[in-house]
Image (tube, rainbow, N blue to C red; front, side):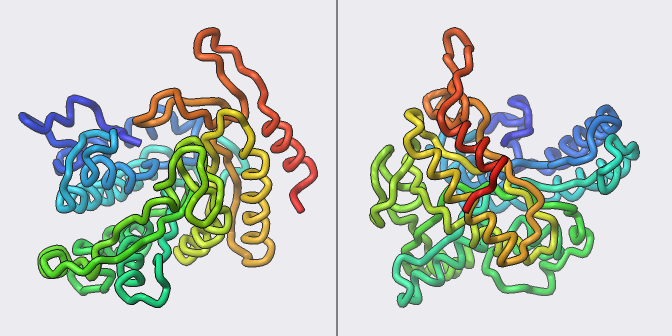
Length: 344
């Protein structure tokens, strides 16, 4: 998530991470070195994993546990702009320095993409204009801003969702070969009018993430809709994956589900989670004709989870942290059957 060294983020004295334009240069140099060093072994490249999570959680939600722990909407906007620029420069660097096709069936020697956490935003009250406007703002900020900038060249700096002439940056357009979609759950949004936010930040209605939906549930509980929630407190909402894919399909790039999974230590929810989400994926490909090239379940084994350590168990295989032994969960067999037989 955070491909930037600790030394580059010293908020009190010194560099300020993605708030520094020098971070763009350093990241581009890093991407060039990786392409030059590993180009004979790698054809598919991703510049960032979940850049908007870095910007929002790191620069706008200081208590999230994500570095560097800043609380500023303006800082998040600046970080997002700099990460867009860093992606575009890194894209060019990888194309220049990886000229060796590692695999004969690769589209080209450097197929450069981006992994994006897509969270569909739904209004709490569909008939309330303030909720609809707030959910659109949230969708524009979190889902549309980054891929739109590196495909269409529209850098929506004030995040008002209105295309303005000075926001069209031709040098950013066409800097994406494929797009990874990480999907876990949804946002349910309630809007609030704020004149200062509208005047100074271009926010038509301030979005509030409604608790007991999406990411805002109690761990291992039920959402306000009566849907089960994971050990992380994330509501299971498989139909949202179709909306996420539809939303990203308009950028006309091959799509991959690069993350989709659940924190479920007892493995009670994961088998059905797998079946339901892959059924939605099947519908997306077969009925909606969305160009999805692959699905990667998160995760093969229990892993380190940002800000939560090893407490959250996402793996198809359990890991004993003392002995490091792996043990197959029943959901691994479910996934094996789906791969072999498909899902109905």
